[in-house]
Length: 483
Image (tube, rainbow, N blue to C red; front, side, top):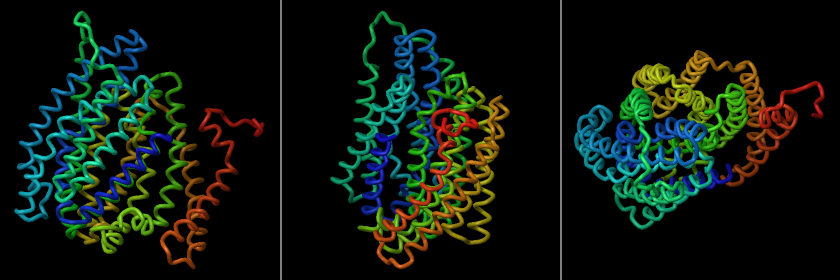
């Protein structure tokens, strides 16, 4: 988690640079739109390779040994090159067709700029799939630190490119592509994916490809919700899409950190005590996510000011982004619970339930988006609220579907942890507001308020240390509290 924290800090630094260089301009709005299309066609494979191939590689290693797993990883890497090339071509073909749909509220000239910007995404889309295929090989052997080091390199290289060239929005996808190219080279070398004797025959990957294809189709339904989300966002004033994106990036980065970069995939792939480990994981991330979400709600304006307000990101952009962030922060809780639940569908090979979940995401975004943004005219706040309601209802639905997979969780216990953490965060919120009422400076409010908030949370969590021990170490509470 410490290494992952370094990755997140550097990613925040990159986001700060992006905000300073591009602000909440219409150019950045166009970038967000074309990135959504790239995610729909190409980047959706990123999560697929980790959630599908990691369990396959773990099982291969357990049944046939280290070398057999390495050969399977090489075969998967080759497939990733082919799929990446095909997906990139589909992306270029699909962009002119989908741009009018996703950016309905944009002018024709602005939509043309979206199509033109898509060509600069090609280097990034071509290297993305091989990068995650190599990362999956290392994660399957618990070598997470090497993956995190590669992520650090990716961020550092992209920051370097942006620092040199940032006069045009085209620099952004090129910077990401440069980082992923260097990161892929490091991952492939560390995983030993370049070494193979001519006598060694690569194992078949039909089952892997089948699951990838099934999940890709399911993810396309999930990507439809992304298209619908961007369609709704196109109706907000210029700069609103960029503000929503900055907030979403911050929330997703924190969510990724709290789910330990999905390191839970490996232990949950093992069948023994799977339900117990999943329950402990969900309870643990809830106890981490709730106070974090509460802190962001309390200090959204100060956080955005410190992180982003410089260069082309002015005071108006700060207020707009903080309004979105204050609502979006609450989705951290549902997001960190949803992620391990969703991955269980791939682990137990119940891909059909993924279709159901993504179908509801699309329907809920469309329904609540039109209600809050088009009908009520709530602008960026309406978009954030629609995303929050969709995330919460999706989490409830996914929990029910996981129970249909034969994984029985004690939800009453998880809900008890949620209520306890929420009560503690609410008390900490009130104390922090009172403690900062006399301060006007941003840093003073953050320091004094953050210290007050943290002290209250520590007091509450200290009173529940036996519960925390049972979550961290798998120990059930007994009558002897000293245990």
